Image 1 (tube, rainbow, N blue to C red):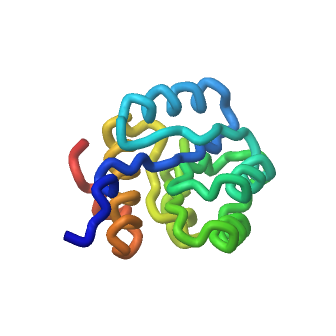
Image 2: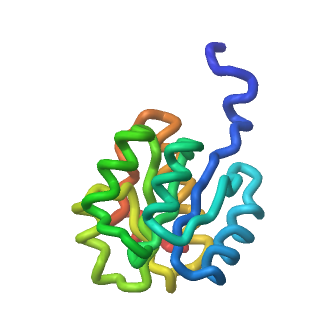
Length: 147
């Protein structure tokens, strides 16, 4: 067997990037319930996000589309130049932002009004795709999957 014994137990490091403190706290509580994920840090601005990605190169970023100082199309290439394998899941209160976010290059999109289970599922699928070297998760197919 070629796999490392700890490969299946690897904990994914996630950075939360959301402008609202209550949302960051709720997301942190949600993710900390999953043994396969840990929250590296939570930031409130695009500048803070870039600083944290440079320091920690996380496995995934939950990215608020309304983050202060954020232009999704501009920050994604910067994030990926620092951390090429990072998976970015856009989290937005406006469903009409889905196509723009996906076109800008996020790996998946979740509306803030969707269930916590749905968010976890999308994040897990995206992280699994990164581990296996698969293409970014098909966000539109996940949208159709019942939570």
